Image (cartoon, rainbow, N blue to C red; front, side, top):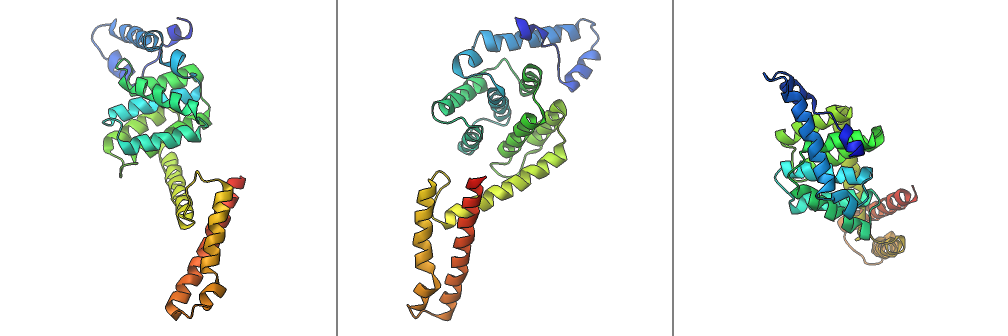
Length: 252
């Protein structure tokens, strides 16, 4: 079994509960069962070998699948959030399709729980703080995609933070800051009548069209009301600001 044979850890709460059990062999038996679960997931379902490379990104998708399963399943909004997560990890085209296949196989696999998937992520890939932080931020995004985070989701993410040694409150604040930045970015694209997948040339073309439409000289030539002139001037400034923000973001 190689590495899988060495998978002899359990969540902190489970360890405490098992150590309190009356039968001395219960704890060892639980560890043995956990190793068996991991082996089955790899050797029987062959999720990792046949579907996608098991790097840190694949492990993140498995953890997200088990989290979503515990939260009630894959809703359209959660799948949309998952698609953004996959693309943000530079899985596009065929790799994106493989990522979704891995996700669906993992979500249907009954032999692995969410905490166990986190322990596998930590044990097999010894993730650094950066990759652990990415996973936690993805979990926050998934937990709040349909509105406020449920108490069950919050408890699950708090457990994930403990397992991966990531501070919960600071990471939640970072998620909210990232979310606000994402909303501002989306607003800029909407103002330019574009989407984030548009090429820079398309963005420039839409920008030129809007600048021409709302340019002060164009508005002045139409003898419109002072109220509309003020509105056009404000929109002209916002169009410029949105275009500059998009170009600056794409340059980084």
